[in-house]
Length: 189
Image (cartoon, rainbow, N blue to C red; front, side, top):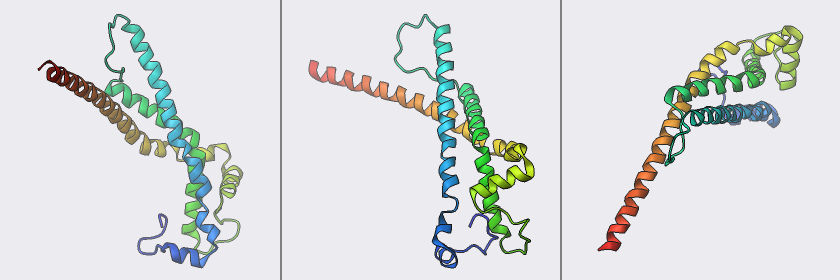
């Protein structure tokens, strides 16, 4: 449906009744592989965050007590979010490129093609086609556009997440103090 012309997309039942049921799961392997992208992103972000916070705590070694966990500044969170998404995108981009090639094969099905120009419809076919016609650089064709598309939103998301986490922690501490103070007042009367 994503690659069909507007108004020409088929419903699930029509798609399944025209072909083999296994075709409904054509992109499942790549989709499962691409779940590694956010896993890589958040792992890199957390590792970088821990390093930055360790450096900050070493610089401010005169802190007396910590009532809340250390957090990143908005700029640091944004920067680490951008770096972590870039790393994840670079590592998973060959699979993203294969997925796009397979999706574009569906668009070209309706047009007449000779067997040599036919687009691959499987992950192995896409990998083979890229390797054969474009070499290693072909696996990263369009990477710049993909990074521009995803990095800004991911960096903003992680920056906002850090700020919400800090606010939530502070709110929970304030609520705890309020409840303890209220409880003491009730006991003293």
